[in-house]
Image (cartoon, rainbow, N blue to C red; front, side, top):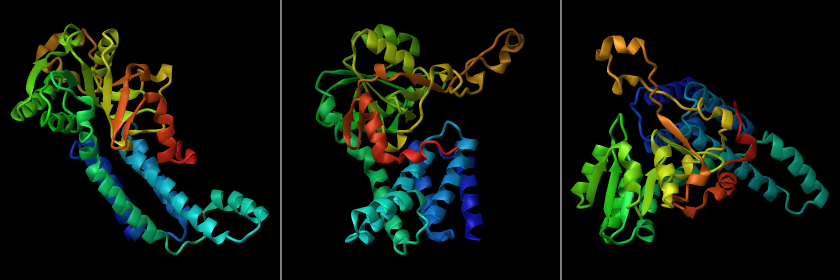
Length: 346
């Protein structure tokens, strides 16, 4: 049955993310878009209400299994808003020529229900998903195209670890600008070494520094350009571990911090002050202190957090394919991406 097949697709997506088969947010975004195409075209639903319930169920599945993975759920939330908008447009067309009283009462009933059948809804949604997929595929290039507006000749740029979006951003600027890049190695995974090697092959003067050297080098830096895992509703970041320290050092030296983020990374979730520690996910500490240390492990507690929370006051500018925005404008972007009724679905 198509329903079982799509349920299997959700479980497969969750499993692949958990086991690292699908690592980057871009890959997760494309997999989620393909999943939604199957849901809309193959699953049985008679109206928008039933389709929205099915998508909400998949959001709950992903949220329960991967509470910190926001890319897949954000894309599903966005499609929920698209479904509402398509139905609202049909209601407005049907309401042409009706009295004001009829329009008001129709909006109050149909907008909350969405149980009326809409014959063209499937085709309209599939057409939108096709356009949305093109937007996902070109998002990184559109962000990179803005590089010359933010990077100037003889500047020193600092970045952390490896981000495909930041890498393309810097390489695009290197085509017409001569600048230096300082890459923080981002232990214990040390993805910064791969980033530095890739930039050096493109002819960019690159220097790798340890995490402990960030504060000492920050006084020479003109701007910090980083990627992020997700952008919270208050404009804060859930970024790779160590980014918070980099942002604090940048704040001390009044160095602007620019964050390159795709729109699907904006999530309508807040991090309360008492949750800043509990929302962090920890990995195995074996990369920091190997098991070969033996008896020492019985005497110490070692934590290896994957993410840092970076408050919005430490971020200067978000750059997406739509341009640059201040952290205080994130709430407006969220209202364009998601419907308020879909913010909390679990």
